[in-house]
Image 1 (cartoon, rainbow, N blue to C red):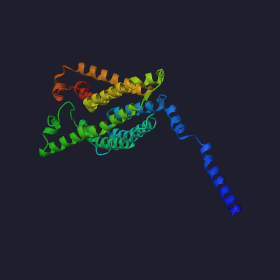
Image 2 (cartoon, rainbow, N blue to C red; image 1 turned 60 degrees about the horizontal axis):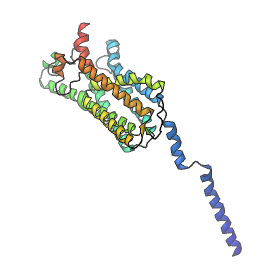
Image 3 (cartoon, rainbow, N blue to C red; image 1 turned 90 degrees about the vertical axis):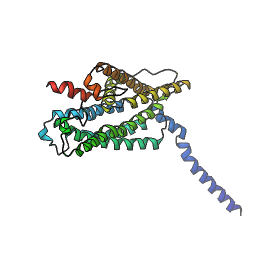
Image 4 (tube, rainbow, N blue to C red; image 1 turned 45 degrees about the horizontal axis):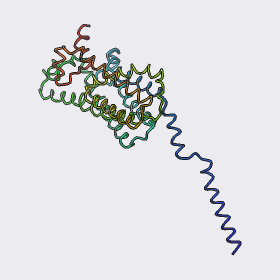
Amino acid sequence: MTNDAHKTQSLRKRRGNGLQKPTLNSTPVSLKENLPHQKRNHFHSDLWFWLTLQNWILDFGRPIVMIILPLEWFPLNKPSAGDYFHMAYNVITPFLMLKLIERSPKALPRSAVYLCIITFVMGASIHLVGDSINHRLILSGYQLHLSVRENPIIKNLKPASLIDSFELLYFYDEQLGHLLWYIPFFIVLTLYFSGCFTKAKKQESFPVSGWLLLGPSALYYWYLVTEGQITELFLLTFLAMVTILIFKQHKGLRPDQNGLFLLCSFTVTLLLVGLWVVYLWSDPVLREKYPGLIYVPEPWSYYTLHISKNH
């Protein structure tokens, strides 16, 4: 009995030692969680650069490349170069947004992020189809500064019920597609901003890369707000960020470099939108096209009205 008890005790010791070894040799869970956060507090110049670059090329550059490239290369019954740009945008942008969320110093609600990304892709895909057809209408004489029923190439269609179909297309392109595209986009940015705060007593100096990216980033958001006709959504997002900022400051927190970059970008965007409205405040044609309390004309409507007519 004594030998059996001795063997059992030795076996338990060996098992206990085996269980303790991984614990002694591994990094504590809290340390594992803290190490990545220390790295993530630095300015994400790579992600902000690629996000800004692909926004300018794949989103802003879409209509430009369709105008520049010869029509013979892309027949009207086939996808255009801008459509391929849009397809690439619909894949690359949500990927970069997910990578940005991964680097957030704060754990964000995954279900909300995933739902926003899925909705974003659906809305951008709806817009892809509507915008592709809309561009072909422009090549046929459609004028963006006029409503659907006031366009010369639309109002003479027979039967007249076809006009309803083009109004439905406009709804999918300029309203539903934009809402499903931009609402989740700004929600993700707001969620990310809510995690970009630190307890550091001394504010880190803003990097040179951040200053270089600030202008292009803000200018793209200006285009997004004006061309996408999402001024109200942008203002609500900016207000939400300011509210988060005030709430966090009361808790002794301050925005890190990434949060400061996002907040500064939106602040400059707000200034640019204001200057744009003041510049076109007295334009009678655009005033009629964009009635309502908030008057923010689209850049491409301004282009078809004042620039393309002069060439």
